[in-house]
Length: 127
Ligand SMILES: [Zn+2]
Image: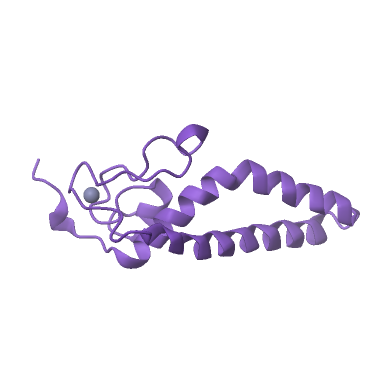
């Protein structure tokens, strides 16, 4: 994937401005620090929380991701496993929602940050 695109920052969960620094405090599935965003980028020193409550907006992204997950599972079941009953599908949706929730939580925050922060190639320190 090409560095400099928003998809790179989202897929790698890196700083939206320099695409080098880490965005989260620890790994996605570290449940103690689930979805915790660092104060600032350790490479370009961008402050991630641009204003108090900035990441509340990520709830909209999280909702969209949840709907996308549901639609994906529901469509897949009806296309490839038409014999699955409603309760099997509900079970699958519940299972994947729980298992993927730490990842979706982190993903919603990095997507939200990428709405407002653009890549700047000069934000990286010279090596
Ligand atoms: Zn940075």
